[in-house]
Image (cartoon, each protein chain N blue to C red):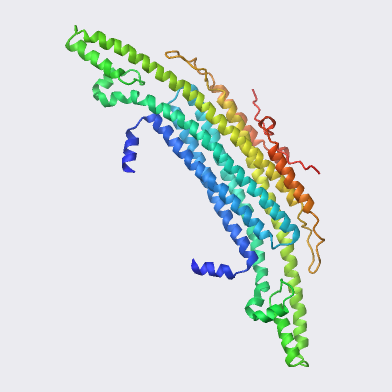
Amino acid sequence: ALRRNAAGAFGPDLAKKLSQLVKMEKNVMRSLEMVAKERMEVAQQLSLWGEACDEDVSDVTDKLGVLLYEIGELEDQYVDRYDQYRVTMKSIRNIEASVQPSRDSRFSSLSLLSSLLLCTRTNTPRGKQKITDQIAQLKYKEPNSPRIVVLEQELVRAEAESLVAEAQLSNITREKIKAAYTYQFDALREHCEKVAIIAGYGKHLLELIDDTPVTPGETRPAYDGYEASKAIIQDCEDALTNWVTQNAAVSAKLST
Amino acid sequence: ALRRNAAGAFGPDLAKKLSQLVKMEKNVMRSLEMVAKERMEVAQQLSLWGEACDEDVSDVTDKLGVLLYEIGELEDQYVDRYDQYRVTMKSIRNIEASVQPSRDSRFSSLSLLSSLLLCTRTNTPRGKQKITDQIAQLKYKEPNSPRIVVLEQELVRAEAESLVAEAQLSNITREKIKAAYTYQFDALREHCEKVAIIAGYGKHLLELIDDTPVTPGETRPAYDGYEASKAIIQDCEDALTNWVTQNAAVSAKLST
């Protein structure tokens, strides 16, 4: 762990921050998974407790258990989609990491002084800084060396490589970050709207519980909600199945 | 731990199941809290990473960080409301636990045989079964004992106590279970609709990222989205503030 921390501390800064983000998202996923698992367990326990209660309470808690279990399953599906978002962010990290070594090479190949003197751009590509450095040394020591021309051509190629790498990073970062968060927000919205639908049907179920207080010894009227509770579950399942992004209920209107 | 498990195994069955549910809900809450915490950390890390990127990516990731952090805060608020649901379920457990000892007394005070012979109702109140047993024994051993009349009056009082306790349990269970789940579903719906709102505004933010590919060496047009991104955050905050249950967007219509 110590070695890893030390390596991280000297590693590419930008890629390090994103690496950290990708790692932290793994934690979010694990916790979401835990919520899903525990939600399903709670759903089953509610049904189990309700079994010993009167018919109406027993039927309603059983059906509530079905709905709460469904929430757990949706949470599990959301975790899978969260992982897709995370994998997309990881691909930005990978391109950053592949561009970064060239940016950092000056620190390993040059003295601090020459790097202070020579580095004007922060995005110095692999070898580019080294070549610039060699040319400067040659011009000072052997101003007429034919190697200067060779190195200058090499520098042009390195410049080109640098420009391509930076353009790639710029293009891919933008493309991927949009894709990742579009995916994340679409998944989140779908998940949330579906859970809100379940919550709505859950409230309908509660209406089937007869909460008129009885006096001691009084018998409650027989429960006749079995058909109604079955229909509520069916309506809920249908609403979930028929949910489509195009008909998302929650809007996010812009004022301007 | 062993002792506690053993005690649980012989404890009141109904109250035990609900106790278990209440405990499991505590776990759900802890995991939800963890998700909220990690969500806020991720939000900050995203802003931190974006700082070093180009202006558009930097501004948008910063604002995405604001929205994701807001989701974490909403999750925290939801946990608080989840606890209110849990506390309400706990009050059912408490009334169950206070009614239950009378139901179970036959197992401790009578032999298995007499309990098999004499128990017709499962909800035997405190002492009721014991008195019935004493009367039966007396009628067999001393059929003319004046104590039989005293015991029979005691039995009537015990019957009454039992009926009251059962009516209380029935009334309170129904009232509290409705209150608990109404609270839970209202909180869930509010939470979900608000997060869906945030997801919608998050997608608007993404539109500000210029993802037109650039060729190597080409400079991107200057970013001019600062006003727009600020407005999106403001619109989102307003939408969250103005959200009211009455205008909930997601509906749960019944087919019948």
